[in-house]
Structures are given as C-alpha cells and as structure tokens.
Length: 395
Image 1 (cartoon, rainbow, N blue to C red):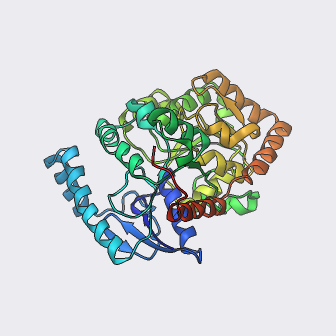
Image 2: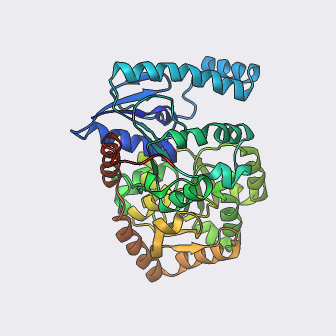
Image 3: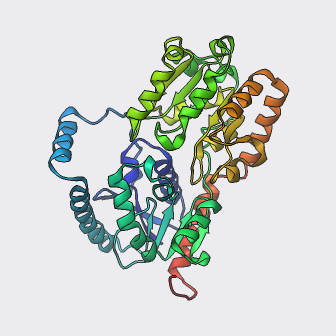
C-alpha cells in the first residue's frame, strides 16, 4: 500500500501535531504492509526526518530573508503563493510515487485524485478564535471546509473532537473515526539515580518541583497556573518551584505581561522558564516531577497529561474538552478558571504523600490504555477502508 504522508510538521520543533505526525510516520515506516512517501514542504523523501530541537537553529541569513519576505508580502498572499508551489510539487510527487492513499495529519489537504484520510486535532480556531492570530483563523475558515469535504475518511484524536466536527460541520459520524494518541516509550517512571544527571543541569531535585508543559499561548491558560502557585506559602514555593517547559507562540507579549505580575517569584527562582526542551530531556524532567499541572481551556487530546501519567506522575488538569477522556478518574480534574481549586490541588499533592502515590499509580495504570502502536494500527486500518470503500456518498 503506497501512502503519502504530509510530514511538513517535522520541519519545526515538535509540539502536539508534530509529535502526532512523527509517531505516525515512524509507525508507517516500520509496517511491512505500507510503503510510505513523506512530503516535506515541497520535497519528497522515503525517510522520516528527525525534527529540529533547536529553536534558534535557523541561520541568521535565512531568518533575515524570511523577515523581509514577511514584511513585503501580506500574510494571505504569502500563504497562497506558498500553497500553490507546494500543491504543484505534491501533485507531481503523487504521480511519480504512484500514491494510493494520502494522509494529511495537519488539517488542510492538498488537491489530488487518490483516497484521502484527514486528521483533525481540534477546532480551537472556531471555539476560541481570540487565542489564534487573525491571519491563521482566516486561512482555516477559508480552506478547512473544503478539506473536510474532500476527505474520504476523517480521523479525530478523541471522541470529543469527533463530536465537535459533527456538531459544527454536520459531518456524518460514519465518515469519522476517533483514534487516540499515545505516549512515547521515553515517558516512563524513573528513580532518583536515573534522573539526577539531567535534573542537575536544571538545578532541580527529584520529586521537588511542580511541572507545567505546553506552548506558551493563551489557550494553555498558564496564567491560572501562575496565579494558583503564587497562592502557596513562600516556604512551600521555596522548596517546590514551578517549572514551565514550552516555547513561546502567538501572543507571547501577553504571556510576558502575566510573567511580570509574578516577577518576584521568578527572581527568587520559585518560577522558572526552561523554554523548549528536547524530548529526551523533557521525559526525564517529567518523570522527576512531583505532579503535572495542565489547566488548558481547550484541547483536542492533550499529550502532556498522558505523558505524565505514563511517567507515573500524578496530574492536575482542567475538566473540559478532551482532557477528561484522557485522564479519566486517574487525575484531579478542576475548572480551568478556578485558581483557588488549582492551588488547593497543588497543596494536597505536596502535603499528602499517600494520596499522591495513589494518584500516581492510578495514572500509570490508565496510561496503558493508550499507545502509539495502537494509533498507527488503527490508522492503517482506515487506509485499507478508503482503498476498499463499501459504499456511500460523503455527507
């Protein structure tokens, strides 16, 4: 089965969609039934590229060139020009590689004549447009409906997103299949001696910090985590710092304003921003955390909670969107706007060792319900289905 996967998300440091694309790409490469070809922003390859882990890896000349282009050409025009060039390369490659199935893991499909599988991760630009750049919202509103209509089968990363797609776009449920994501084997419980080398680099102590992971953008709602943490006593904060891992995204200036409100805690080393970290380091830091806090207001799946669970780390997360579907009763679910409840949950995790250990065990057990292997196997089953459709029109 000759499959084309748009692997363009692998050209940037991995976040949610990039991680999904990477895991599917690796899974296809290891499956004897599939002969995959990967499309990288206009270039075809039969190899899975390792994503960049260096945010600043782009050369100064390239950064300067992109900056000039961005200022000279309006967003919408620039996107259409880029899209047209990639479309031409994609169409030519599909013919050259005799593609039988095309899988688009990142919302917007290219035009072609082969059966299409489209992955939808969320509808955040519709539900929370203020958390996205206006140009991005405009692009998604313009192109996404056509992508949905063109797809032979739609994969969503949760039952929650499946229902969202049905409700918003009126898509028949038999055209949609929910396939959950997984946690890499990197994310596993570790003892102190296994984490010490990495934690020493960040001046952290095993089991002595609270962790928050996610792109620093409005939807992740990290301001609530900052405010909740600031309610803890100074003595507790001195012993258990709050560690934020994630790169800055759109509206970073707004996040910086929020950071200014807790500047004394940052100066005291009680709140620390580690930026984007390679997966290998993230997994170690995750496994050494006292707990993970994840107060996001909207997620299509929510990988960080699952990765914490697989690491044997208890989770405090919001009770909205897809997150309860992932965490279940193995974590503490709170209203993402309830600062006091989050602060109290942090405090209990710190003070009640028996409770914390019980929640950690429940989290580890529940994490075993999810795996990337299962995700890939179910995705390949969808490929088979679109290659051999039973009957029925797209509605």
